[in-house]
Length: 452
Length: 183
Image (cartoon, rainbow over all chains, first blue to last red; front, side):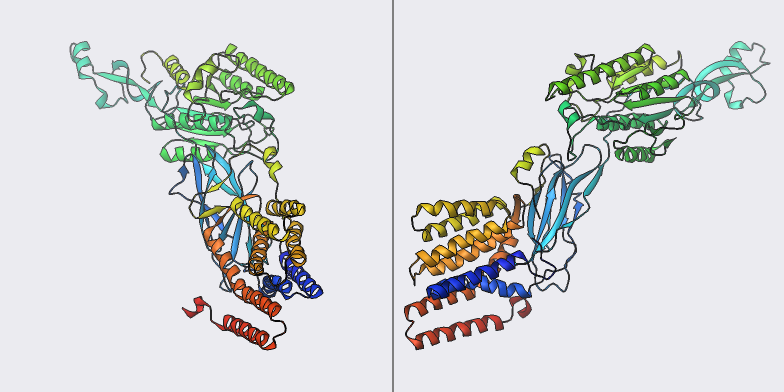
């Protein structure tokens, strides 16, 4: 209903037509009161001839940080971008808003007025939370500008950090500083042996008690030798190929994108928790994805690196896998954690490959507890076959001695009360939760007599 | 501009719509109800108890819900033409009709541009009201003059005085400086 290029609008034309009808019927029936009926319409048409829509800049949305999460919803502020000085008087601005999966709603405001809007946001990740566009109306409504679509409001929510986990590490630690005891001689606090002083031994290593005990004539000095301290390296490999929602009917949903929390949020939350656990102990963490679409985040340590990892994880979205020229190569002695839904053999193949190369490998299954809500028998069969295939892939990994833990309950994705439902159905996924699995692996991988 | 109608909601059901988080907003359904109600009340006057009143009621309800300029035009024609036919000349209901027709026109014209659901701020409604009253300030005297002409059509001095008063009133309205520039 915008104005025509000639400057006339359908509303203005309607006012003119109705005025003519009033005048004609009044003249035909000889009644001045019928003519007077058209007076306001005639005045509207007269006023509308001179009215022009102001060319104000489009209002824009910004994230209101003060009340960012109100009842789990994002608070966005629709603020005017400034009014053109040439605008004779303020008009109306209509902002048409559409949240993902919803029909459009409209917000009619006076020009220059601001209004906060609550919209659903994701638990983590980077998504468009609101599409909108605006158009202007003159105060007498006889003129309207064309609809002006704006770029959607996109927010990026960092994945949450859960409670810290135990840290399984490789026996072949190669770092030079850290909190883990390695199996190679060097500087450290873990006693390896007591031996005679050799050239090259530091004097502060002399153990006077052992010297007094073992060198009876005091002619030979004894020194304490230790295992070197080392930091662990961890490579997180995230599978961006799928994002399975908890409700199985959503697997088949087509059409407009919706804000549905799926397995990718579980993968993000699990990866963040694992990264935070290792980085808190001074270890090094790297991040790569199975899709091969982005460069890997190199292993590093520190709190700032955790923020980098979270930002990179927040930017992960479903991306089709590319054919890689070569498989990712984890750092030597690294723990490799693959976070996936294990719907295809690729994650399992890489886990087996790295396991065969001597790395400590852990699979983290990110499929949430499923709500079986299929609508048709065909959908039911598809889901059943998909889960069967997953089960075979997971059993194959278990036969090869590769631990796969359930990473769906780390934070937020699943309520804790749903856990027994998952454990009751071993076909759906592993029954070892992420904290328990990491604790067992840390205990199993710890060498005798070497502290963790 | 075409917006999805109610059926589209069922098709894309699943998301949670964005809602404004402040006071001073009126839901659009209230505006739709007001537009439909005014049209029905005016129609009840001019259709004079006829069974055909169902027709303007249905059209008025349709115009309040569907974004169609054709239905708006039909609603107004179904009020104007019966007024000319059914209402007696010189009826004092003219003043109500002039205001009512104008209100129906403005409200339907507002709704024509908008999707089905939404909100309008009180400031925006106030702006529309001020614009409405500015035009009514001229339209109501014109209606009074029309009644005067109808009653005393043969008395030329009365008509001339009425026209002169209307012209003077209009000149004063046009000539006075707006409040904002006076400040």
